[in-house]
Image 1 (cartoon, rainbow, N blue to C red):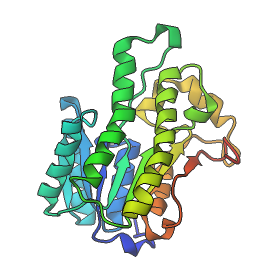
Image 2: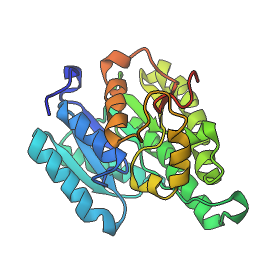
Image 3: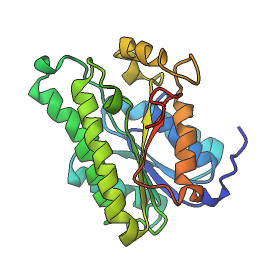
Length: 263
């Protein structure tokens, strides 16, 4: 696949959390950044994900000839986040991180009244605490320079309120709010932009757990009658990661073929 017209990204360094699934959004984002000259860190957490993550890393290294770090670590603790950043810089031989994509997530569907404490805590620890700790680590330990990009992967669920995903959608709503606060705190002081990209239904393992939600959302799409694919998200991440987006921050951007219309 030919390179895109984002040459300003060449030589930059990115961490994409939750990027170890070959068919996932995170892997597509990492590959798209790498195709444009970005060295990337592939992050995963479980032993089951080790081999697929290694395959993602190898495919990027072989095809795009950029630096690739492979880091197994949980984002949901300050220590885990710091280790991801430190190990990325060590493996890539760099002293900073230019781009952070907070993509790690999970979906534990079910009615609110049946939600168990363990699942609630796990959901919020990965999708709320994780981006918070990663941002702290990247800006502090990772010394994200002026012009840095923090991109939070949200969900249209925070605005469409699917009944099958009350805890998941609530966690994504919290991330939407944090995006605005972080943009203010890190913008004027550090020159870093922070935005949320919120996908509609994308054909991944997570969406496969709630096909009825995906079907309902696809029916609301204005731009297409097909379900999205990971590359649809990766293309928009590429735009937001580039210098062309320097005047865009604190935004919730629905990448959803028009489900939400004007939000």
